[in-house]
Image (cartoon, rainbow, N blue to C red; front, side, top):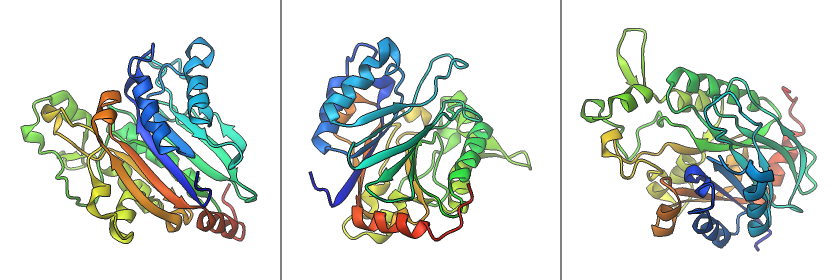
Length: 301
């Protein structure tokens, strides 16, 4: 293990690999090969069941400590999110039991990186799949972790689109035959015109969050446009086809420590999930420096 870097993996593992682990072994074979220090998982829907059996099996397989979002009995299924951290590298300060205003609760862990006195906020989120206004509210909540003196890395399934133009064109909604999906991924503006929902990305960008894939593509040698590859929608032409809906954000200067971004979409990943996996690597010393500098900034919360 390279202790000079921190590898963070973000992955929406479809239906948590199955209640009985039908695809879970494949998923964790993929993760174990990457030897991550942090995993931000979406759709951890079975990890709380049977005393957290799947959660604890994942901890053992990856050598990480796992946390789940607060239980969510108000929805049809408790589709949790999860954060896994490497013990020894991270010392957990607290897990925030976030609920309102989210449809699916985010998992938010505050942890100290080594001896850094300022905690790093790590958030795994899964924005609402069916309501653009709900997603906008959820993005607004994320701004509460972007205040002065705060350093946050947040990632997950946004169920929406990037605001800036990218190599992948946004869906042409007149050609999308799944009309319910079209409604779920758009909103009606003040003039009554239906628009593609890029608003959550816009809110986060305006609040100071940096899209780490975009940052890698624009500023890191050897990364390029591959960082902006699609992460979902591969077999869904009726819903607009492949799109980059799984995104990673950082605020408080953490993007300056980013070294590499990679979208992994291969046969093993496809066998485990309908989403690609995204791995990004931070330079540990630079990230520690960012956290140390945050001490000198008056904190908002």
